[in-house]
Length: 634
Image (tube, rainbow, N blue to C red; front, side, top):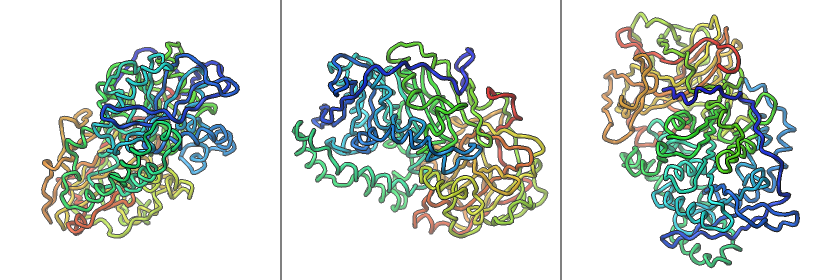
């Protein structure tokens, strides 16, 4: 699993890279850029260039950084106006100690440079870059029909980059960047290997948005409908001045009236039609993914432990092809990239890191940033930043803890207080999973709210005890020494169901001496999709630590009521310190709304479920762990 990149000693996580002074005092924004596509559609864009004090654009050629967005570029435009104000406001909020991410860390995010990176990085433009924000086909002011990373959208990226290189303001060197959808778009564009594309800077992007967000564990995610509604709302708010100037207003109105709402109806049919072919992964979903192995441009990936795409971080890093690559993983959420960046002991501000990255690969300036990391992570449980040549920790070895029904004495609040022990259980017992609505106050809610609910207090992110009331828990004895989890985990369960289907939601937590159950990572699985793809799974010393599944319709396995069967639940990678006196806990629940949605037809096939504790067929947690290593460069 580890992918060493360089024998050269890397720079520390808080290294600072020289980006030089601002060269230009202002920016010029052209809101009426129209980019013709080969099929007649027109993509609308904002071009931001360096300008003199009175706003007159500087003549000449510049390296160009491109951001493809489905969220209407006017949001980027107005976001730029408040970026510096937001940065100052964020600095007024004191961050936590970062042992656990808190609501004030979300507010503090704006101090770390992310608003500049999201809007149109003025740090770049003031130093001699042009920045182009493009409305994806069928969104914002662009004509055509939005198709969620469809093949035509892939082609649009390539045609747009080729068009940019022909413009008088481009020096032929290109970079692509974006947050979330824009980050995935950047990776897709890079996988096409367009001429002139030298670097990628992708933030909270995903390897496979359908597997990770649309059909997590094999069931729909309700937040997808809200997200699609937001994209559709944005496409009805055009930027009219440029559209009139470029004579595309009529075409825009025609396309919007032809398809007033994109994808929402299809998403509803997928969720509510039993056996819908697109409720499984298939070829039409696969053609929407980035070809990561084909990427040769220098690639920066920024992720977070509690991001909706946190499964992807290390998989993307490992899959990206030849060329320089960097990975930074913070302890945060989808809306908190760069929280704390720029402060002492933390990485440089995100807008400056992006500038140093593009300076190195678009302009050939020796900033030294290629000697960073290449894997830089913030360890959960202590907030310490670490630099490594690879992930997981090279000293981490596979370990196994068995699920037993014996009380741990630490979770009287849960549906069942079981134990995690080094030896298998001594007797057979069926542990039924509680039936009932899971508490909204949970880390799963925080993940799906992109971090917003952390503002409501620790039970929405840093303490899952309320959610554990409708689950069964298995907890170790207090640790006698510090323990570091580093890598993916696998929960192997022997189970039995009363119906022909069952869903399993798993959370791994760090239990503090006072009782707080702090979530570290999570996983989920629909029983009928339990078939393991052994060729693409990860084994360490013969132990399965990361089970991979195709989630395709042709791999569905039967679930026979009353007949025990085994399943392996993939749990996303993490890096976490559990102090002596703390405990490790695994929580298993039959659902986790709003993270997962069980459609009515699926619910009708579920009729009770439980874990079979059996010495002959034990259930166990497999994880990679090591003791505490010395210093921040573990």
